[in-house]
Length: 364
Image 1: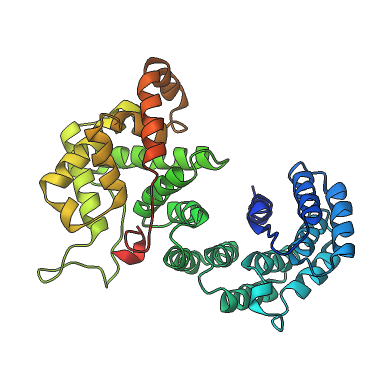
Image 2: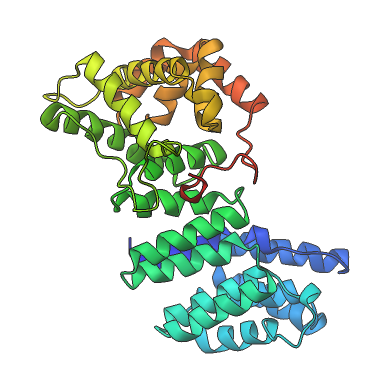
């Protein structure tokens, strides 16, 4: 799937988040909901017709105008869509009348027209109005990656996580981008965060396979080279006797030691049961070395909690299920009660990422 098409999927999936019904009659709200339902069902002409009726009757209903611009764009009626969106993004309007989604759509429309200068300018103006908008930073990151500027795209993803650590797509795109970098440790961590935040999304299978395959590659690399490389320190991160060693360096070292102890065979792909054993070993060693108190990490703390509940194995199989789907299917058939217990546990213990406990490259 091209980056441009992915951007459009991203916009469509965000339709519901843009709805605002404050101060509008109930009939207008219901009509807007019908239009959104039609759009989600790809009945774009029907959605356009409904939305034109709403806008004609309630010309100041900003979210109806936004949805109309989106419906037009999905039918390749870019000129009218840009005109509508430009009006919504007019900076002479009070900030209270605008939303970050308006600037996102306008920037994406310019990107569709290969006008990257205006796209970047629109995201910048949007960020001036909504400085904590992770979605606008992620859109900038996508455009930077499309232009081949991977390092700048990664920096923008990190700013998105700093601005709003609860926004799931920062981790999704972060995992994809770091997968292609020389620091795949962040792809492992970000993919797992995304799987916890959006376990049933359409992107979960991709993140599951990415997460599993990075561990598999680490095992294969160690068997071949007697080392693993998940992180390349910058000149700022090189450790010495006077400062604490970076978290990625220790994570890599403990994982490598567990792989060495377990003596995996690289002639077959890493089974999910072996990955379960590997992560169990990692948690035990991490705690034995006292890193669990010095280097706080909500994902590793989650492993420990799950292990104490007897659920770590089920959790690892669920995370890696799309990496080895046949093995997961066999596990699921034999451990239905265990998976039910895990589901109930997760319902009670949703992963909560906050500014205080967030996991990000710039944190370490």
